[in-house]
Amino acid sequence: MWIRRSFGDDILYTTLVQSYIDTLLQGGFNFECFIEGGRSRTGKLLAPKFGILSFILDSVLSGRVEDAIICPVSTQYDKVIETEGYVGELLGIPKKKENLADFLSASSVLSLKLGRVDVRFHEPWSLRQFIQDQQFRITGIPKSIDMKSVSDPATRQKLLRTLGYKVLSDINAVSVVMPTALIGTVLLTLRGRGVGKAELIRRVEWLSDRVRSKGGRVAHFGSAPTSVVIERGLDVLGKDLVGLVEGLPEPTYYAVDRFQLSFYRNMTIHLFISEALISASMYLKVKQGGGPDNQRITYDELVAQVLFLSQLFRGEFIYPTEGLAVNLDNTLRGLEADKVIELIRDNEDKVTAVGLSDVERAAGRENYDFYCFLIWPFIEASWLAAVSLMGFSPPLGYKGDGWLDSAKCQSSSQLVSL
Amino acid sequence: MYHQGDLSYFEAVNKETLKNAWARFEDEGIIEVAKSRNAKILPRAKLAPDWTPLRNPTTGRIVPEGKLWNFIERIAQSRREGKNRRDGATVSTRVLRHTETIAQNLFADATAETNMSEEDKILLKRKQKRRQALQARAHL
Image (cartoon, rainbow over all chains, first blue to last red; front, side):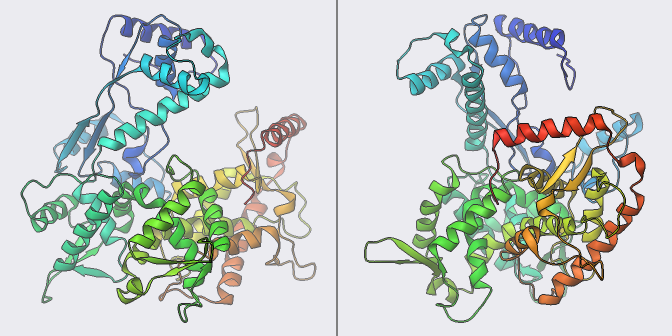
């Protein structure tokens, strides 16, 4: 089915698309849609797109369609196809217009070594049942399938959002972290310039454990040992992304193109976002150095900075659904159990301060640094954008009204950064 | 800044992330963005009055103080202290000069056409009222 990219205010067109979808569903046809626009581009988990879902929801709510069965599917590639052209675009090189020649040569992309493709299906569920469950949660009246009651736009909107996030979280529940994402994450969270093979294997195994303990899944390696899986992953990434220093006692790998590798790191970041925000918040004391007492942060200070950062990045990441404030204490306890941090409690067992644990210190802050390295590039980018705003204070004696071309302002932020 | 060692991550030179940051700043009311009904007029931006840093009346230089400066410092607290980054109090002032110079060109380029028509001013007022009514701000 072909449809326009944007409908604008065209009521007739919207109605037409609605009846397309009604007809498809009434006929019992399968219907595939991608609600996760954009993930393939930066690798990051993004908010769902509600457009098509809204039509499907309407088909069932209106009673024109009895039910629709939803099957969330996750499709992942070892290699992020688009990176090269996209990197240029992100660095400010204008996007080339698509043309036939490029389209034909894009077929060469398809014969590229993309590594492994992983497709997984979530157990399908009934949309009708989902709506009933939601209604029950709100009204407490079971099974009163009164679809008409969802005529109120606010209720409908809420239902749609819940639906979108449910599909998204189902996709995530079945999706796996690919070996290339593990390698990319390890290479971008190192303190040193490169990493020896043995250490790379150790870090990838460590990260796989972390992913699993956060409820994520790691692509099944079969019976192959980690070293073989890494070998294959490095092959897929290619030497333009990961370099090998030869002539050393041990093969040593380093990140050649940090920018492209960041897309691979982005595939794991959502799993650790709470830990990363806490670590970066603790950093305002940790960076001062000195003894453990000096590096400890009070609980209130920590909470304030975590909230500040999470607001700052609320367009950048999807946070755990229970909300970061609620999630904060769980994450702190998790980090304590992992012996990364120590929580100082008062007589009433209330946490008053947070610091690095002795174990973590002895281990060279390995875990703590990992979490910080995940978020630091984003902090840096926000800092940069904010700094560039300072310049937009009109010069003394300036005659204009102070309005500037918005796009030019943004590219000047980018210019400042270079 | 990256090339002069004031920025640790080349990744920070990322249009997508900068765009996200701008969207956030607009949400917070740090910058005002005005879109015109006239498609030929590009969207324009301006610092909100209470976020605009002052200039030294004699030198004309931006004074590193005020709401926006505090906001920057707050982000900077969680920023990586780099071994290979030039840090300390001077860094912020040097960086400030840098952004000042670049923005200067924008003000020089801004001509009468970027000034707002009366119709657009009304449109902006309405948008701001709506925004205030929504009260979706996070109060950073």
